[in-house]
Image (cartoon, rainbow, N blue to C red; front, side):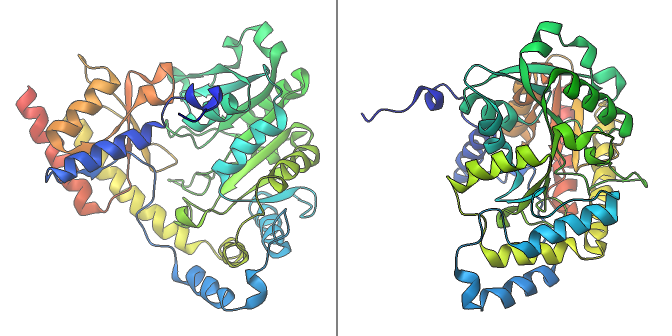
Length: 390
């Protein structure tokens, strides 16, 4: 048997791949499975973006390698977007880097910052990739507790002083996955102050920043004073413009961190296909009306699922961001046993909260990533199953 590195064999399987395998097994038995697990938008990419891709892919010069940090048009579009949306000035040459999706950038940034044995603070509950990225980089994850009683704000005060002293990197994610939590500028102000005090790289995952409701606009961490001294923000076009498979995102912020990440990336990839970058630039320069239409659809779906959960006795307040619902597990279940039961007996995939960290075990996550008809069917199945259990 060929050797496999310990860093790989010691990494748990990606939970969503496990659920996809179970889904395939049930479908092979003829079960109609409704997948509310993975956060992959089902809505189409707007046609004006596809049109730009189609035009650019016809040009032979676009089939050459991209520059390692991304084409100038895309980086300038990112800078223009930040100026227009957040009133943040960015140098497209030194403070903007194109990514092959923000997930890739997050993983490579862990390699950029961490030496073997270094500590990284990751949110609990939080996106599992933060932990796996730290692990693959040879670092040690330490949990940054999120305060459930205070809207899943970071509980900075619960981090021990020796952990702060050992840490070299900290992740934040708002609007949050899985909790759908949102914050205002004061949270970022406090995080920046702590990062400067403890000499941390502060990494903010803003993948859901454009998916917000009720007039709420998610702030950028770069709007806070001193942010560029310590912070990098990761953005993605996956959730806002339904471009998940296109794999296009960006990192912006601190010049030294951006340069370090660009060195890692130039040794591991050659940026994204140029037509995809140019289509991404077109998306960022749009009026975002397509995003607003998507958000209206998600909000309608959210109302349907919230009503369904409440009819099951599961009380959840409406979030201000993301297309996720983070709901408490009914009594008598762990998050894993509840998710297993719902899949086997209702044919509906939900994500157990334990996948996102130890404090998630009393919760499950629902993704609003299917059309209204299928969402209503999922809700109906869960109601029928619940009535049988009662």
